Image 1: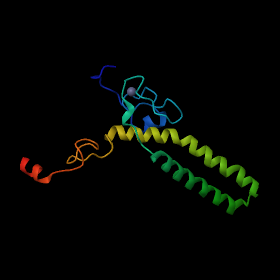
Image 2 (image 1 turned 135 degrees about the horizontal axis):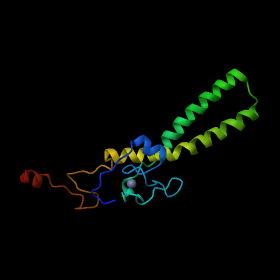
Image 3 (image 1 turned 135 degrees about the vertical axis):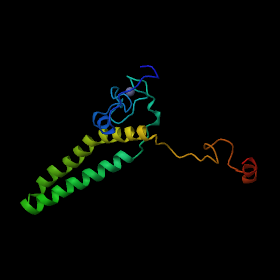
Length: 145
Ligand SMILES: [Zn+2]
């Protein structure tokens, strides 16, 4: 698609659940299990903006952990299952739940980054880190304005 094309963008939730490009909704977001592809194979969107860092891991481990532990606690109180049965169900539920939720959670956060144009903060007064040195002369700036 050319750069001027009008895209029928999916909702961030849809792009996340299907792990697709947040602009066109067609190209795959990931080139590995959690590795973001360099660009969209369908519309060419550069995915270099995508950096949710440890956000997906935090939300997934918190959400899955709370859910599984709540069900586990309720089951222990109601049914008194043997210890081996608790080990055999709780750990697979934690690991499987996290693995199942990580990709859509990361894709959803990348889609939210795309929609809200979220990126690392830049200081207008100092410029981009590494450019123009570290000293900011306030007198010079006040003369200019
Ligand atoms: Zn795309």
